[in-house]
Length: 231
Image 1: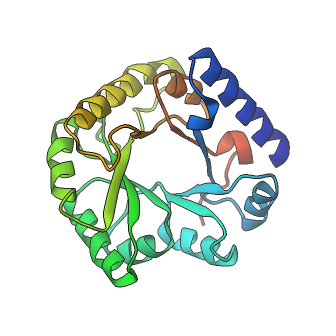
Image 2: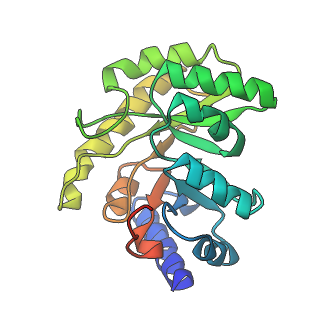
C-alpha cells in the first residue's frame, strides 16, 4: 500500500508541476508520519522516501533513534523552548519557528552541537486563532532578528491555512504566502534569496499549493492512511 501511495502522489506532483511549467524536482515530498509506527516508515524508506515530518518532539526523537538517524526529519509541530535541545539535535529542518525566543534557544543548543540548522518561519497567513505562527506583518522584523543568530539559516516560510472542506479556499492563503516570500526575498532576508522554500499544502490541497508555488508539500493521510489518535 505504501509503495503504491507514494508512487501515485509523486506522479500527481509531477503532473501538476509540469502543468504549471515548473520542474517537478523543485518540489519536495515530506511524508507526515506523526502517530505512524516505525514499521510503516521503514516501508516508505525502502521505496525511496527519506524525508519525514513529525509533530511531537518526543515521538520524533524515539523514531529518529530507532531508525539510527537515517532519515531527514522535518519538525512540523509547535516547538516549545524546553524541547529545543532535542529538536536542534535530530532535525534536518524545523518548519515552525515563530518567535525570536525559539530561535535563540535553538541557536544556543546548535552552538553546543557545533552545527547549523535550516529553518522556516511559520506564518499565520489566515490570522487563524486556532493556528500557531507569526502574523504576516511581523515576519520581516523576526527575520532581521534571526539574521543575527549565526547557527540558524532561514530558508523560507511555512503555513497552514484555515481548515475548510473545500480545498480551493486554501488558494488565496497560498498565494499570499508566496507574495510575502517574494517581498522579503527582495529585501535580502533569507539564507538564499534566489531559492526560497515555501512549505504549504497537505493531502487535500497540495495540488493547489503547487500551482501557487509550493516547494515542499506535507502529506500524511494520502501515504499512510488515516491515523489513530495519539497515545
